[in-house]
Length: 241
Ligand code: SF4
Image (cartoon, rainbow, N blue to C red; front, top):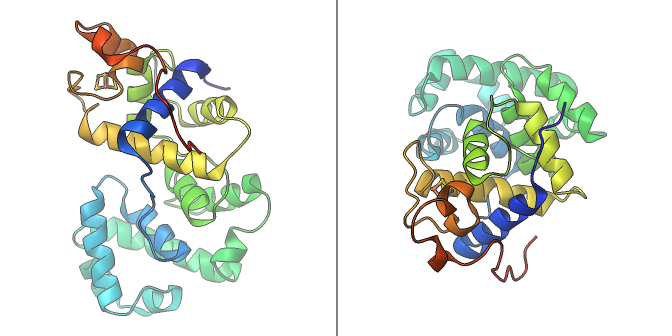
């Protein structure tokens, strides 16, 4: 099943966010392995907390498969304490690290066609679709779009997808089809820009007044004063990926 996506509105939103926010350069990591660890730690918590936990691990010189697996459980939990549910995350991280070791390393785990690599990640307990796709896109550099409930809420408000229940796979497939052909830089920027929009403006209570996406958003355009924001997709995107 594939979500129905209004391609014109999607591209207009993407262009508008690109012009408003510029390149986001996400994901902030020094290695694919750091992306993978961060993808597990970021579940249900802000990046600031993840960053604090990663700093603790780095300060201990333990940002590697073997060093993390060699750490006593209490030590690992202490490093992860800044993240929510740190005991559960420590257990998930250990399970993932054991899978990496069993595969012969991260590159081996990510090797092959994206669909096969993704299936291997999803087979690891504790790795859900968003975590797997964070790793695929930002760690392995594979053309797999990342979506989440926040993306869905924004796209419904913007009129890009119809209102309804968030379903991960249909939305991911629908957006990938609308953005075809697959493009890693584009997928990276789109997800990061939507996260930025959700953090700064399109919160549970949206701040439509100052929102830079208002002119291309069905919800924003339905409010008074939208004329000042310009027509749908009228911005110059420059070097849009
Ligand atoms: S205009 Fe309002 S509803 Fe639309 S993206 Fe911005 S904050 Fe969200």
